[in-house]
Amino acid sequence: MELRGKRITVHDMTLRDGMHPKRHLMTLEQMKTIAVGLDEAGIPLIEVTHGDGLGGSSVNYGFPAHTDEEYLSAVIPLMKQARVSALLLPGIGTVDHLKRAHELGVSTLRVATHCTEADVSEQHIGYARKLGMDTVG
Image 1 (cartoon, rainbow, N blue to C red):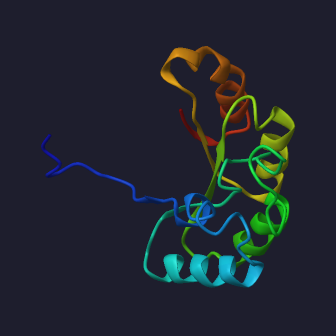
Image 2: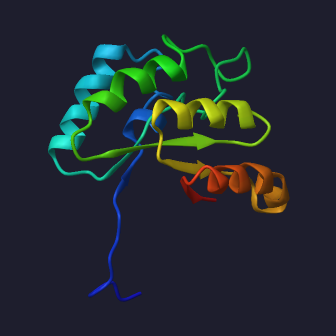
């Protein structure tokens, strides 16, 4: 694949995928410090949620130190350049989780499913697009 002349967007997952090895217990201060560092480094898109996405806080996936709302509310106002994204796994995250993330300022939604279950993502992708969010799925 030739990337010369093509525009790419770096989408950093540290604050979402990095929750797994921390057993979802990242503090608000850790979250803010890392997010500000990524923003200052020029990373344009930063994903912030529970390791298993919006609504992931559960006995099945682990209880985080803070809610998705608390993490998003702590990080979004600090961003000078970067936009904040969220992960949503249909069956874990709901349209209500998506609405709330959008209200808090999440600009991009990444919807992830197994390829054999892609049809279950249609409502989430459609609703995010209706809200004007950049949507990847």
